[in-house]
Image (cartoon, rainbow, N blue to C red; front, side, top):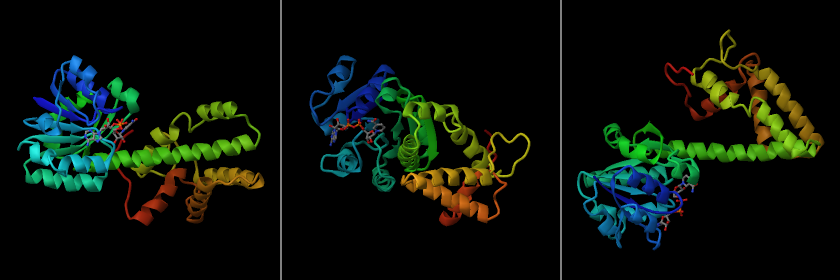
Length: 307
Ligand code: NAD
């Protein structure tokens, strides 16, 4: 099976290397010269043009900076649509736009080329050690056929549904991750201003519910995904909404007394106040998620979900 890999940057280089190590016949290309040397020593072939790299490839993989570069490579003059053969597969590992991905998938389909979006998570170290999470969207049968190739790139391959869904997962994750970083900054600034040294605060957080991952690994899925907000024996994690509301109000009172702006804390306080006003005080604090479900018109439930 001939694999073409385009984009040998911080991520693409180690990903291509792992595909070579898995025994595939790999052709590599980057517009920046000099990046392929080590890969060629390991057995890859470097072509001087995109067209040469892609001609006759069974699978074309890209790891490019973003939507502009991917669109250009696919639709531009001398690009993938002009060179890829009918029956081949295009796998985009870049973090891209789901709107563009779905548009490109239609153009690919017109040429009988299948497409998977497969953004990765885990950084350069994850790429080097093959520990990447790979979030894949596209036709199930294409995913199943090329799963061994995806496994060569990262051990955490997840099928996310139709084309673009891998990217939806990736963007939701990165948005939550960045928001959480903002939450950490906000909270730590409050704690330090209130007189605790940062290292002690760090250790305190690590020993507490958040640092132990109770919310993300147990509380949210055990409550929101199952729709079980009422306390019952055996529920894996429960903290009453009215107690959480009281604690957040105490924290916000402390912030107000110290003139510390808390934009995200203020949103949490407001959501919890509304939860209490709705009469949900004795239910699990994750019940506030229902407020957002109502605004958006969705329910976040997984059928027959078990932790
Ligand atoms: P990078 O800038 O290091 O690599 C991109 C490569 O694409 C470069 O070598 C560049 O020369 C090449 N390139 C750009 N346009 C090209 C073209 N027209 N033809 C051929 N080559 C071209 O970026 P990266 O850090 O490797 O990231 C790649 C993708 O992976 C991005 O979408 C990024 O968001 C995503 N990602 C990165 C990380 C990370 O930690 N770096 C983690 C997860 C996901």
